[in-house]
Image (cartoon, rainbow, N blue to C red):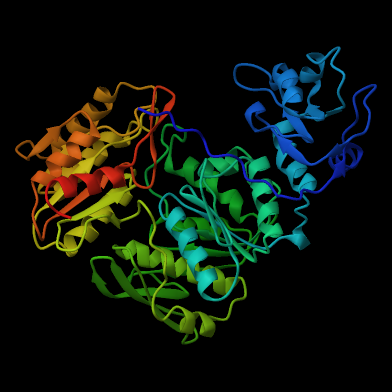
Length: 514
């Protein structure tokens, strides 16, 4: 077992230099007594991310105050500190420039924007995507679309960061504000013109996208997730709505595929256009699936004035066509010509997405989809999409995260049991939970749904996927929910190197499917 390090924060190669006094003036905050002026080249909030020339934001936390780590930050290269009155009292005797910023978490994004030079008129076109499901797929489709129409793409998703031709593994779904602005600055340095950005509810609530103005934003859908943090659908919905405030964005795209789309539309402070693949819902733009097969979903996107774009994505599922339609419509809202989009995308959107409906099987073998699905809605849609193109058996392997929403575990178990021909419950990222308890909750939901079904509770995902492969032949399908794109497992705080995609390929090879 090898511990996997967290990918580093990406920063510009040639950062701006701004004075501490200029930052203090921008924020409207005072210097601490006796403080000298210095030049700054970056912003950090964790000692592990500090670099030479940084201002370190020492903020109050749940258990302790960041001011207690200032000595370490200075040793790592910090040249100044921003902290509140409480933190200032902890810095007595420390000879380093300090500005006093009350509620520093609320000013962090603004400070990072200023230090990294991300003035609104200097930014590339920014596209923000929120929703329960589809955020990652939509921003990956955006990145592919930008490249295919001749723009220079940037992207931040839970899977990858894209900076023109460079692809880097992501740290968080939505990076903290200092990382976000450092990343955007690096994109600007590399002449990126259009940037797709995955925006979670947590990113909005925790101020991770503060200081970023999005030219176009989109809402994909809302379904059960994060009920360990939000006690109702209404609270969850309201956590995403600030992205559509006029202080954060210019134009919007709202998908009406779920019932909450209309609520989101009515709450928006910005002009929006609507899109849906549902025939029973009125919208400005319509998505219509025209063909489906293993690794293909073709569709037409039609507009209110006769616009028509015919294209496809290399991923199964009607909802993937909907996500791609949202991405195309965002590009149109940003000013890209729909006629050019129609020509440049006529042969499909070239955006295979690791861990999203990702068939890792070789030709002639049973299909094995390794999927990051972890919500009841996304899992149900993926299973139904696979069933439509599977002539034989459909086997589900499922594992879920520890220290996350426990309510959905039996719900997901029931869905997998109801829609499969056989089912294996296994481990994923237990974090600090007992993996046996996580498995049991999924298993209980499954066995309650179908008491006589073939449902197995197996410790160890390596074993589970090999048993699943032993159960199938040509024409059958396995869907492995859990690992998706991730290259590690989180066990008791240790990131252990692990790839579900590699394990699935190895299991197939061992069974003779090469």
